[in-house]
Amino acid sequence: MREAASFGTTAVDERAVARPRFTPWRKDQIAIAVLAALCLFAGGVVIGGSQRQKLNQARAETGRDRATINALRSDVATRDAQIAYQNEELSNLRMQQQPAHQATASAFSAGLYRVGTDIAAGRYHTSGGESCYWAKLRTSDPSSYIDNRLHAGPQTVTVDSPYFSTDGCGTWTRVG
Image (cartoon, rainbow, N blue to C red; front, top):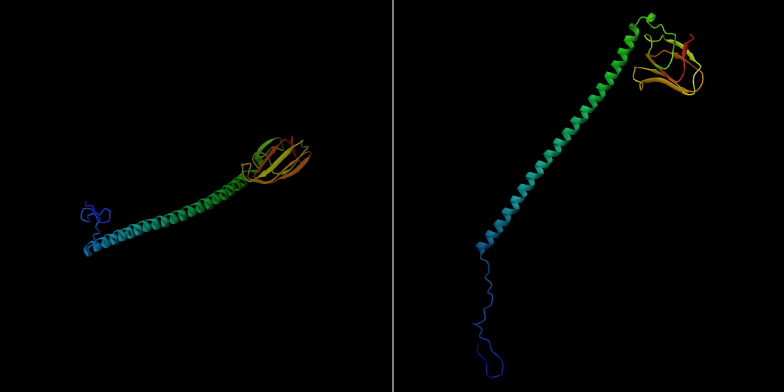
């Protein structure tokens, strides 16, 4: 560096200071960069489209699976209803096939009885109890009741169902 003597200032040799030099891109470099960006964009579109297609297929399969499950549930419910109906019909047929003379009991206490086999159908009376419960049943299942009551005191019931259940009533005696 040289100093300028004329004004007392310091002069800088321009050749000694290195300035960053801007090198403009050539056209072929720009074209390659644009082409690379387009390729990356196109690749992203293809991959995204492929993933969307897979997602749509999965959604369609899920919809078909749900439809199949709902159809199977409906079939099971229909078959359950058919089985319950057939069990009831079978129970009624068995009741009809039993000779009337097999049911000899004209008095009974707490328990579950098959009408026509364990007890005879007819009208029964009891002096009752504090919580006398009775139920006319379609089957031997206690939840298959046709009619039921829970009362204190005397009761009179016409037993005309396939099954009859009682508890806390004392002795039932046939009156008709």
